[in-house]
Length: 283
Length: 333
Image (cartoon, rainbow over all chains, first blue to last red):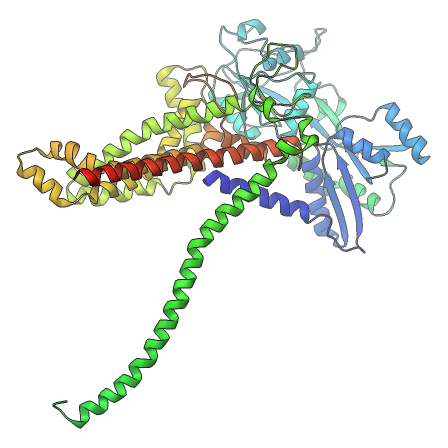
């Protein structure tokens, strides 16, 4: 009974949250943002803070995936498209032919995923293929990747998290996670579990905790292992990182431009760090 | 009448004064009884509204063509082929190129954790209730009862955290299990939430057994333990059963403890040392970020509706059983 009430409460909040969007005053300047599910939370946090500071501007952020956002941009159904992958040339060409203007690509944040193991784990580095093997269930013992003879306990984030999706796309090549992978709500829970479990591995955002160790990623061709940091993520040296983009048709103008400038400014970039991403280089 | 005018005068006044408040009282009574009736029916209305809402959000799973592209009832119940070409199996993998929504691992996981919790909680709680009502000296009883009842007031997120940090280490240390977070860890945590509920209701059932039963039994030469176990316990069975069903309902719906302590891996296994994923934890974890109106969204509501109907039917059966037992006990005595 209790959880049914909880569902109803969650759903009610959800429904009211959705209903609130379109009913804004007709005269207010409105910007629509659509796209990547990874960036939905980031986009909403930006929009909330921006709208609080700029009454009269309404910013509607919806998800659906990068593909959905790009399709909406091509159809002219959104002002800004959020995408966690670069637009393909074919898609850019469609925008040009449809609207007669080039698409404008604006990197707004950097996303990087850290791999951690327990402090007591002797493993020095892992390749991306090894991490994939562990999470798809093909590698189940630490011995297979040069560690102790111990069963691997792999922790993942819940599937509602953008990190989960990024990890799945980037590391697993969109393969499915093994069924045995344990999922925990939040990076903090993963870090905690890894710090207590000598045979475990986990992934998540940046974390500063005792009892865990960040594992450097070793390139397949035998280069130096790389740890995630602002510098390696920005330079692209760390493989588990990516740019998050805003796309607009042509140079942004008016309310859209104001919002994007604010996002790239110190306040917007601070929110980006708060949500768990790295700020973009430059400004 | 004997005192003459003074009294009769005061009486007249009295009747005047009394009559009006009496009318007022009648009106207040009527209003109050309507208000109370409204409150009582409000619960039913809320129940119906919740069910209608959940049902409406779950229905597209059965009717909508759009949703059927991703999920339908057959795919929820039958094994699904793995994306990477492996053997077909029951997989809960909502975020995938081909989303897979098998209910079986979640259903069995829910039953597994709930059974563990109930198996730990009921013997402990019923024994504690029997001790408190039959054997404990008044002073001990005065301390014990509120203490166990306070346990019910501990927020489940606190119990979940306690399991995550303490119980998991302790169980892993004792049994040497590979997985820290597993069905047993969550079950122990759940039992902490269930014990006070079963205890309170069972204790009430024991105390409401007529004192004459005990006196009769003791007079016949039975010991205190024989009286408790063979007279009081059987007489209180309907109440104890009701307590058990209440505890089961609490355990099956509890969210936070299982979300934090069970490991949340949707696998089919009967081992208490393996991780489980329950209905309630799945809903709590995934509903917050799911795309509104997507197949995944409707499947989550379907889970909620299923859980609702399941606990509802179970409670009905439980009630029916309790009533049957009561009839038999009363008929026999």
